Length: 51
Image (cartoon, rainbow, N blue to C red):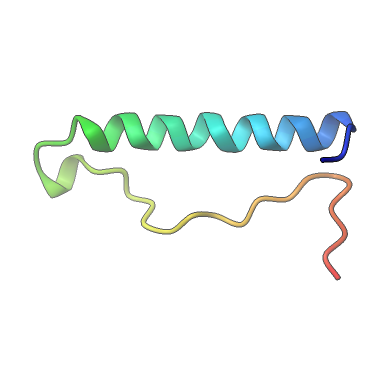
């Protein structure tokens, strides 16, 4: 894994986001309570090289 700060920040933000979605969905009692995002977003960071 790259050791640069932007990469680590991107990974941390991705995990935090996923945790919030999982927490919301695990407490949902109806479909309306579920997080509106239904697909995993594409995550990048400043050092990402989209070849």
